[in-house]
Image: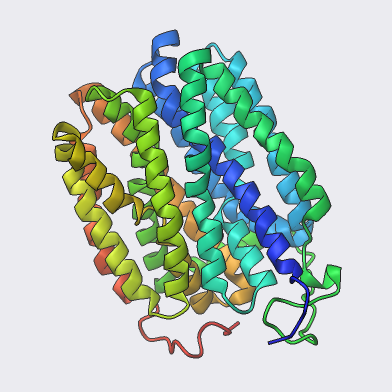
Length: 422
């Protein structure tokens, strides 16, 4: 390991990436507290509002592989700056909407694209460009930013929405994006060599990466072509599809409205989701640490299995005593997005460190396809059946299916040779 008496610049990069992802997560969590106010103000059905959320989730995922290609073409810093500008513009514009298609266009398309440019492919790219050691731990911390974003934003947004209207909550999240924007411009760098150093934990003479100069869209599509020929890609994408359906799409979008259906006040329900975010901050960071030390396939099997059991019990927790919902929050919260660090490690093992940004971008796209379908499905179930029970139970069952699928990922690959295979 290269010795240095001063703090390695990689930690500053990690900090600004964490802050950017935290802000993006806070913005993405906003629909969970806006569904009920929008129902009351405009008379839109939950299925209609969920459609806009689904478009947002879908584009959030589909932008990932193209964003990873833009990281190589125009740089990480510029891509992040453009994303934050789009988020501030889009969230501010939602305060002017009066028709359902306005929400689909503004929140679904503009905010979805902006958020997608800072999706988990950003974390994967930063980790692999700036860290040789502690990759799993750093990935866990960056992934946990989504939980921390909920922790910081949800209670505040719920209070603003309750006392000052949902537009005040929208302006607050737009302002947060504008605060982070100059920090990205002044602190973020594309490669360690730009500040005269190498990756954290790497030798000083590590080769400088050469930008491909290829068309970003061609790079992204080439990655997809490579992936569809790989069984490991389909297993990773399939399990992550289920991950998205059972987290962002279902719980992230519909837990607060489900709590309101059961007589739990909106602010209290947002606090419950934020509490889950606190737990996931620890759970995902721990998951990253574990993925540096243990077989990621077995970790994923446990994560999906435990998540499935918790979702199967959620309908009964909502209608049961208060302690049962708190128990669900603890059980589910520790597992929320703990799947990301081991999935990134398995992606790097399967496709190589230099390709992990684009390949994980496509795998994450499947995550968001699952999230989009689950958001629409759960909203439709609630609209026509009157409750979310079918949606929660089905999500729990497919999580148990994912627990079996992940055991076959990279099954024949030698783990000691895989991480640096390229």
